[in-house]
Length: 532
Ligand SMILES: Cc1cc2nc3c(=O)[nH]c(=O)nc-3n(C[C@H](O)[C@H](O)[C@H](O)COP(=O)(O)OP(=O)(O)OC[C@H]3O[C@@H](n4cnc5c(N)ncnc54)[C@H](O)[C@@H]3O)c2cc1C
Image 1 (cartoon, rainbow, N blue to C red):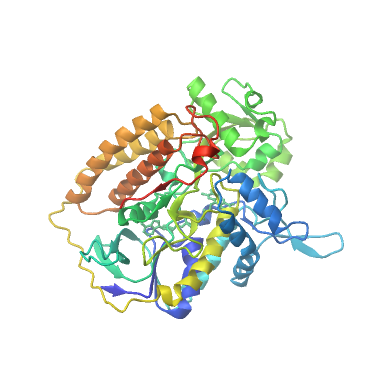
Image 2 (cartoon, rainbow, N blue to C red):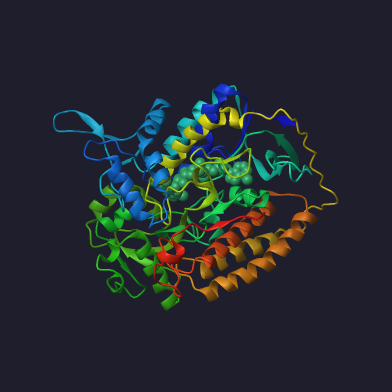
């Protein structure tokens, strides 16, 4: 049995930031299911929102966040995270993270702040359009030099181990995790009194997503099975314009393209946004996403198109070099023809319910980053607030983990070895891929941007059957990453559907044709699901 003072699951910005902070106080294991840099973090483009300019203020950032959250933000969380922002940015720069600067007319330099939808001021710190990669790389460099941190790649957490599951009748607490070593198929028991989920989001539950393949909602599914409270899973943010191409399912076409005058058109070249909003293609993100979805459903088309060809080719090449080159590599010259786009699942606003230290309702279990729900985002995330939240919560959680309240327990618990029983090798991977595909498709068709009770019920019935089938695989076959991810996807999909069914109103990112208005009297509250 492996013992560690801290067991961190996930190597994105949240997990790595925390590892560096607690490594001064004990041994740390970071398990990560693929290569060390495979994470949503590495894909983040826009940047980190924080108040750094004298023209901006905490109050304005707080107000913008509360407005986006449509009544469900926890104002205490919003205030704490936003006011901790500048210190978090300082910690990143001390680790070597660069943010772009610009030179003023008087020769002085200042941060080159970006402005994004919903922000009343320029406040997004960025490094070109690859901010996430810059942060991930700097954190990894520091982690690799730290002898107290053991980074285990290709190790996938299977489930949390609780004293309840081990048969103890006193307080239930988390005491470790079973982890699949993918290099040899062995399942190890990792023992720790402080287990931190930093597993990111669940974009892969949908057919179209901007998220990389690691985003299968494992942390939420594991926490749910262990008995943790899960909050607000109906609020999934969709990005309106993801490139529609069989070889590039996750490539974002930035909002800035619409900012420069691109029009949204259908297959026959007809502009359609005027029907939906006076600002046309520049309407808020959720409005544009819903409009594209409605046009696709109405016309039966696979995608809509974003047309910037009215701008001079040189301007397009200079202003959007990355988008121009990436599309050209796929045979689409965006100076000559419209870009095929679909909305795509982008960010999970809900997650494992935590306090402002990252503590969950289960002793010994913490959650930080996209997997967690602190109350910052409410019913809709303000752009670029998520990297900020991950860094701030890593600091707050590190401080909390050192308090006597969360110190190691004196009563020792031994973990039983994993018993594979009579499990066979998976004989037909096709069955797993088929179920995986079915979940993603049904979530896209029935639980997407625009919902109805009937569609949600249909999804619920189908997911119940799939759940039974997947449980049979789980107990009958030797564990593989594919099988574990399928099991987690099914659980998370069910949590999204159940949460959406419970909210009989439209608010923020949850929009249902059956209840198109917001109903503060009955639903100005969070949706909480808990197994025990
Ligand atoms: C295309 C794109 C652009 C974005 N742009 C921005 C932006 O500009 N600004 C912003 O604030 N946010 C942005 N976001 C969101 C932001 O990137 C994420 O919310 C944030 O990076 C999440 O960090 P994290 O550490 O919580 O999770 P992640 O970075 O996703 O890391 C999760 C880690 O957990 C590991 N893991 C998962 N399950 C398991 C398991 N069972 N066992 C072991 N390891 C596991 C993964 O392999 C990974 O290492 C963007 C997201 C995407 C996809």
